[in-house]
Amino acid sequence: MSSPVEILKDAGVPFSTFTHAPIRTYEDIERELDLPADRLLKTLAFRAEDGRFVLVSLPMLLPVGYGKVAKAAGVSRSKLRRAGDDDLRELGMAPGGISPVTRVEPRTVVFHTTVPDMGTVYCGSGRDDETVQVEAADLVALVQPVLAEVS
Image (tube, rainbow, N blue to C red; front, side, top):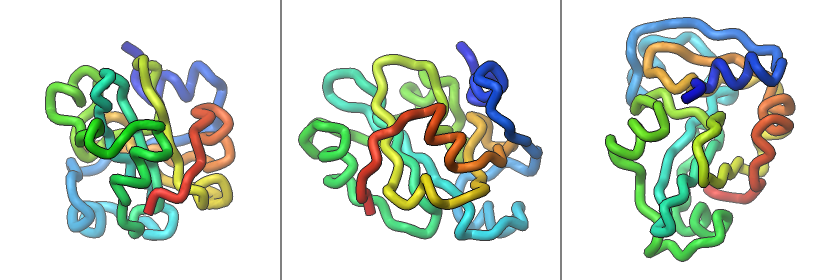
């Protein structure tokens, strides 16, 4: 299974990474990372009843509307659940390091409508102790997400 960093490299996307203490919460991020909050992308993983992964990325400070995520993914809210530890292992990702970049199938990736215009962003690498810095436009071009208002 390819990691998000390997996928970015293989695609020729310019990016950088840096390591830090493990993070899982916004408080961890504030304590461990000296990054602008308006450039941080959080990615949440869900599992649809049909077995498909749904990954949703949005600016860190925006709330997630689960019903809106389900609608963007084309499933009813009752058929979508947060990914558990077993699901994250299947994705090859750690809590606190979930990335929108994966080759795991089947999957749907959803980005908040503001992501394409965010400029330089910071997102998960798949690991909880490494963060990726990448241009949002490059990330969108690679991932080709559904764009939706998910907050």
